[in-house]
Image 1 (cartoon, rainbow, N blue to C red):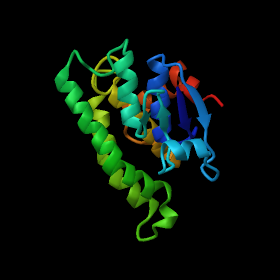
Image 2 (image 1 turned 180 degrees about the vertical axis):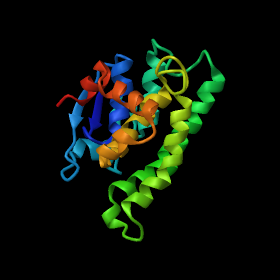
Image 3 (image 1 turned 135 degrees about the horizontal axis):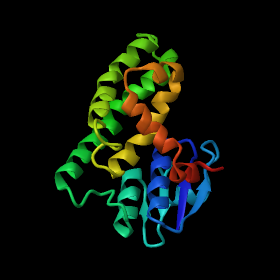
Image 4 (image 1 turned 90 degrees about the vertical axis):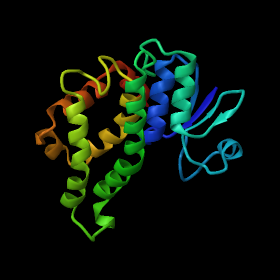
Length: 197
């Protein structure tokens, strides 16, 4: 199996997390986005990453890759099969992350491209989402259970990107549980493995 990836892309990052967690034997091809390989474009003409060639088919979306990997092997129940209500809640979290929050991160990170408002304004737009996640982490180390879930792994890369825009602000902001959650992931053996050059 071959995964076409870009190390810093949040979508490729979460695909790599799930594949590694599930123990999938995958060869990772690092793609230069300005010089995309012909093999990638032949599999997926849109030319974005991640793209997984399973040998039996092609998956072009990070969530599809994550779900495919977890269907093969999910030793810690990232799919939350033991708690269907939490699994449904996870799907809603991922949808908001991939929709509204993604747009907010883009505005915040690249505020100079959107001079209608200040970076501070764009950050404030995202804070209700941070507060939602902070409240979910009350009394437990992960968003929906006492162990990681698909939602945790899916949300991690964009939250990492958000926190990196103004690290000093994030370090002092009123979201200690969210900070601990993020730091725990960033220091994990799993995350370090998928981010190794």
